[in-house]
Length: 434
Image (tube, rainbow, N blue to C red; front, side, top):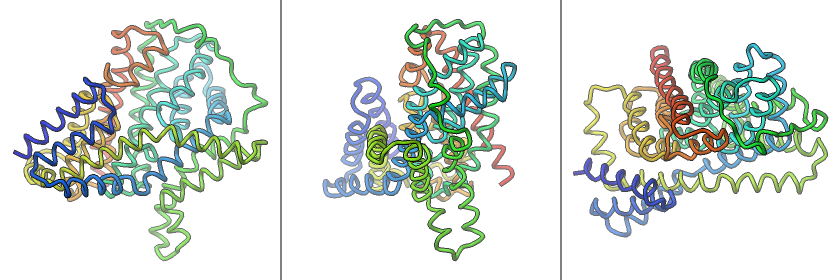
């Protein structure tokens, strides 16, 4: 019976989001209440599960995601993203320009959330394509594949950060392992796959294509741009290791806290990319406020997924599923990836797919012998599987590049599938060595 309830709950969630187009947070809430009632929970218990689901899931995740959004906006608005891209393209030259685009997309994608990153890099792709006289998709796919990998694999992006929180995974280790797995995924889905796309000749809107880059004199320096964009990576990975070497040091312990590392990164960006370059504190604060508004919807989705998870726990559904799957002869990594991939294909949202999967499997995964950091990456890569007509990213790509649905499926959807499958392969290989 619990398995049937779970199946019906997921079907209802898919119908509410994909068919009826109801807000994702409200859909999660309605399905969770229905699941609670079907599990014979009383109203008071359902209410407590909702409160615990929202509060327990968000916690310090609000700070990590919020600070990440602020940092990303300052990197974008200051021109640091353009400076990084210009420099990398200059280093790699026309012959290896795809690899430069992939690296630029990855560096930019770490602090920027996906939709914001997409809108930021599109003008850069159009500009470089026109300057180098190379096909748009040949240039664009490497950069966008890197953005997608950062979005699905790496904290402080909302889904991997939330999944890591649910599985008690170390954010620093998750980020470090994610960087390792990202390299082959981006290489194959980006430059290698992108090299096969020269036959596609999209003709985007002229108003979009004729973009004007900002003058070099208005851009921040290359060094400060790279340092600011990658500061969270350095703090999250290095402080996690230093904490193990100096366990009694209170200052190191504070720096190793993900939310504090993100706060330091935001303050550094506010000074280095804002105040130091002539912005007043009011303008910097305004930029931060706008950035946080942009992620408020994502935070609501995460909260809704937390309610769904908590309702499954309160009703005993999660424990029943964990017991049922405990003796199944399948790797937890493969199971996690597979469930996330199925939900992603059905619902469209990578965030919903990842968080729903961890809600279903968390009792099983928490007691798994597999490192939780690898489970985060397995779920994250599964949540990127085969983006198609029910995914907002699919339509962003289609409309900006002015492609037919068929050509979008043959380019964007295949690229996302490669990213997902390569992520799984990378995680399975990494599991052999750690």
